[in-house]
Image (cartoon, rainbow, N blue to C red):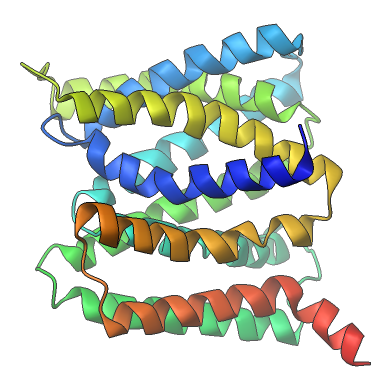
Length: 292
């Protein structure tokens, strides 16, 4: 895989994932949509592991890491899908863009990493300000929009928290194998949640919904993940982080063009603040060193 092609693949998949999530719950509910995606994604991931001849270790640390991964997937996807019921799809990518900042703060607290230098603190402040602007604007779109943002933040917190937990475990498991095993662990939680709180099998599923679920399961869970880890192994992590500066903008534009989602001035300002915060958080050190 060429590096440029991998970059383009990740940008396209991460830009279209929020809209696909929004479409995947049409007429079937977020619990059915998320559960079906996880089952298909797990199947595709294990097929990919088998084709790539990766091992899925079963030692103690690996098993604990799979549990952490499964819990993270469950919290992130459950609340992410739930929140997607109430907010424009483009907002998903914008709010999820805060995850590097959340992860850095948690790593500083839990792992003792000395990451919170002044330009990263500035980035965190700008990110929170941008989120506040979007949150305040959400009240004008409906009474449940603010709830959607809060649910999405819980999903982000779940993902970043378990990411730090996995880093603390240090299981040293291949990324694709970790995804396959984590999806496998998460499936009982999704099935149980669907059975307890919904339990209805859809009478009919629109073709757009079916296509979105399959797209998310295969491209979102397997292809996008593989391309992302390929980039992490081939280029600097700071360059890979550029994707998080691009996809919120493209996701907002796709939601506006393809799903007629509102794109007001407050959303633009809030997104600009969050992206500025990410730029300061991820690239502030390089800019300071270059200035020196």
